[in-house]
Length: 401
Ligand SMILES: Cc1cc2nc3c(=O)[nH]c(=O)nc-3n(C[C@H](O)[C@H](O)[C@H](O)COP(=O)(O)O)c2cc1C
Ligand code: SF4
Image 1 (cartoon, rainbow, N blue to C red):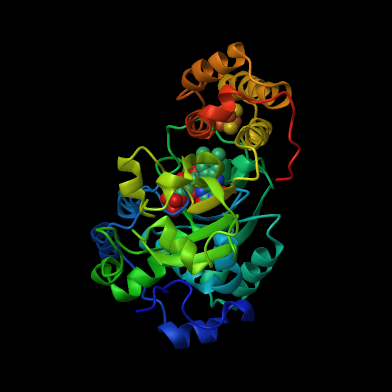
Image 2: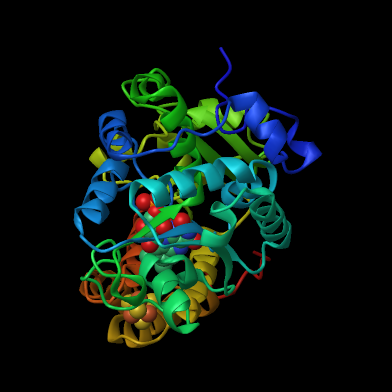
């Protein structure tokens, strides 16, 4: 049986599926309404943007407000290794729009914002063209908004802030956007892949959604396979598929590997020997203290230095914060400096002790989850590359990203 749901249909190389073709392949989208919220809740579907939050629960919260809502389709995709959202927007834009307009009708939204990373030009063009193909009143209800090319621009409160003020920096939560977002209105911020699943669940039901999945997991998901992989790119797999099985679809690994970065830069390093059997399922990974994040599996080749790559990513995360809060402005910067010193000048006991101590102290203190994601990543590096951190030579092995 094919695993393809979101990516079923015409060959992906043929670009965006036109509205007429999309409708003749899948049938017109249902209208939505209260029963869709119940269907989504029963489906057990969770968000695909990183936090794996239950979708039905979020829609219930927004629907509970008396005020009309705003819907933001989050296609910022700021995670450097992720490719899934832009692939989906570029090839199946109407699935994303169906999901966004189903949300709008169900939640009585007065505005829909299609929020696309300004670096993803093909995705932007496909979404803008698709929007122009939609009938009224959908076309007038929605508008495109460019997410600046910054890691934090895809954070939900940053998306709200951009729509409100033109500045994509996170703002303190709570209140969460679902309670108080754009212009104070309850705002549903939902990842574009999540919305595409909603479009199919609305057509085929929760039992259909649950009929896919392995090892007790449910549904399908898009996974970006990156790094030392024979055919890097995006695959759609049943939830619960193991990392080894997903890599096999891409021809397997291209060279010996020491570790896998699971979940992207906010995820965690896992030793290669422990990674193969891990299921790509948010709940199962959470039970093991890991995160699926936005579904990135980055295979780290043995030829690269784990300490140097960790220092490079920490530098990126420190630079990409919005530098508004202490844990980012001081904490991430100091952690990144200490990590770079180990990478450049070699192991010293003081910096290793600082990395261990500060990576705990920073957690939970930012206005958004950016510093938390960064220190979870760092702690996983200290664990996975413990031998390398304990005896790193005094040189920076310059290696491109
Ligand atoms: C620093 C940071 C960056 C984020 N970037 C993205 C992003 O690019 N795209 C995205 O969908 N979610 C991103 N998120 C998660 C969003 O805050 C939010 O949880 C998500 O868009 C909700 O959609 P979902 O429930 O469908 O996953 C980011 C979160 C953080 C803390
Ligand atoms: S925690 Fe960091 S990224 Fe988040 S708002 Fe504060 S400074 Fe910005």
